[in-house]
Length: 83
Image 1: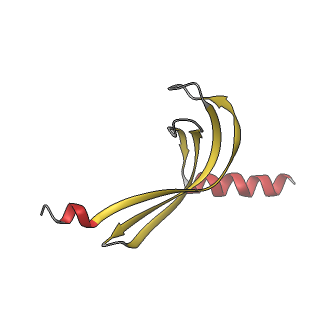
Image 2: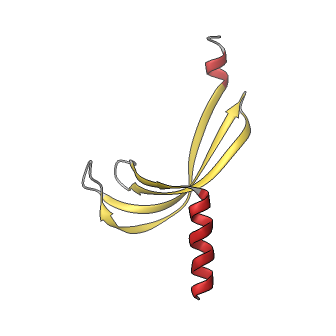
Image 3: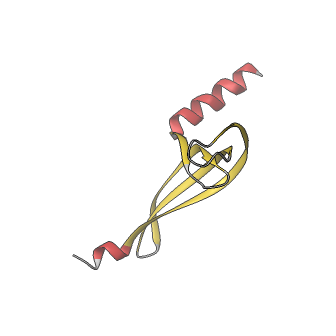
């Protein structure tokens, strides 16, 4: 059972980011909006991944607010309708 915990891990990558208005409540650094991708791996082979958007600190890397992928799709769809 102890060996199993070393075989499963999660990696989090920033795909895109752009500056956003606001400051971090922890360190006072600037904020940015980032498109994130989380991959769950078993024996270094990814078997589940999720894309999501987050507002994160540019200095300390703290996640200040996270949005689910359904919310992202809804916001993108509404933005395309308004154009």
